Length: 188
Image 1 (cartoon, rainbow, N blue to C red):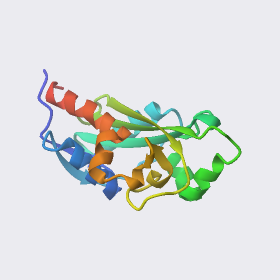
Image 2: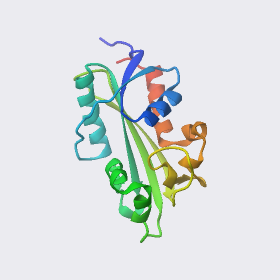
Image 3: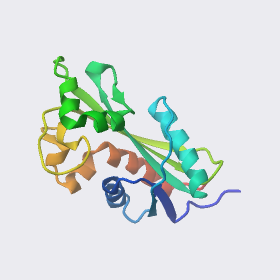
Image 4: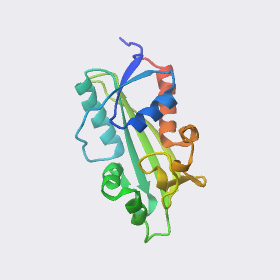
């Protein structure tokens, strides 16, 4: 027996900036409540991490959940820091991330966002991914959060973009666009 997608989904994040961006992009497709649940992340691919985190969050929240994981892949470093960007950023900051590529001519990077949705405990998460190609540059701009000041797309860092414009080109937007389409056209 299938049921419709719930009208309210618990977005599991402690990052107020991600919450604001997600609400702005999703609009009125679904109502997001918010809960900050600390979940021990497994090591693995971005997809393995996202599925595991979402499954654990569904159990903790005892209901439908949405989780988000970000990755920043440096081509010169064969995809690192990848899904471990949170830890690299925490240890090095934007200046240190930029300096990781100092010895390389290739500054290309791919920002990846993975949203995982589970209808509740025991329900296999569904993944929605978005990708944005860019390059790593010295810090520029006053807006954004995280690696936004060093990730450049089409001549501007995310931190130089207005939030409205960023929310039309970012990997988060691309992943949420897929989620929106799925929410509008599916039952679970």
